[in-house]
Image 1 (tube, helix red, strand yellow):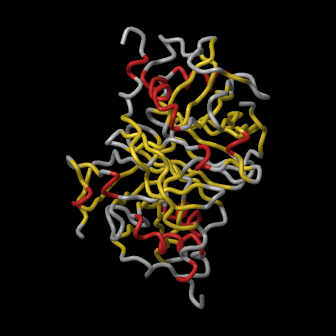
Image 2 (tube, chains in turn yellow, red):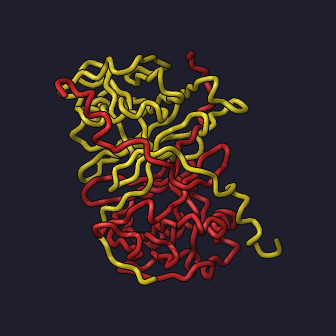
Image 3 (cartoon, chains in turn purple, yellow):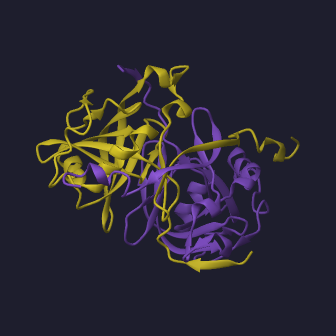
Length: 188
Length: 188
């Protein structure tokens, strides 16, 4: 099929996370979808956030943030935290929070998976920051663990697609990675 | 539920993309999951890639790369491109390729969505690069477009969860973003 040239503001499927900071003197939680693991060792996470957000100011001020993975049942509170700004709304009581090793990185007890991150780089892009943080502590609910590691079917996270602006569960398996394409190797 | 501290090598749900470069003098395609939109305007994509990969060398050399979104039916060829290295395997004929405005950013015709990116920053992390590219051209199949924009249910992309190493379709809707949490706003 011939390709049609489209606008460049294209979106990949996104993980939905809640970013925890201390901003304006109080804990703040913001919903984000521009998030990815980066750097194998030590493990890091990168999150892209518009410079105007209270969350961006909190990360720059404290040099730390948390990344929390809500389960699908938390979709309404998760969406709410993306609808209102910490600059004019106190979101500190939306969730029960807990702390790890870092100041400035409040984590959400209801989230089955939470990570506290130490800021290692704030990449200054034209409209946004890309914050890169080392994961210094990770915490999970016992019933989400398989062999000591979080199993995503048990975590039951949300993903987001745009521009249909739809929160989704993770989908069904279509094959195993590093396995289903093995037969295409020459001599395999 | 009490939280259990786990290893920090934790993974979020990932979009599965095929990164196109010219490396070692030939087109090369590598599977990647550490990818995210970043920066609202101009639109950019960040991808995290281990420094040892042919893809990393190609991006540094050419200052460009492509990001291609395979549909779920391409799962075997997609997995294959993550199993073998462009350093010792010629992957230039796995897919029919096409070019846009940039040199060094071959795109995959079979992918319903493809973007050519001009490298704007190569963030040097301990084991990996985080490449940030401006999307200078985006191309889609006509039958994936709704109102001129790619609809992800029509694109039918893959996501990847780890450590269960499972390719998945996008899941079912659990609500609309910027909408389902509106009733939690004070006065709403």
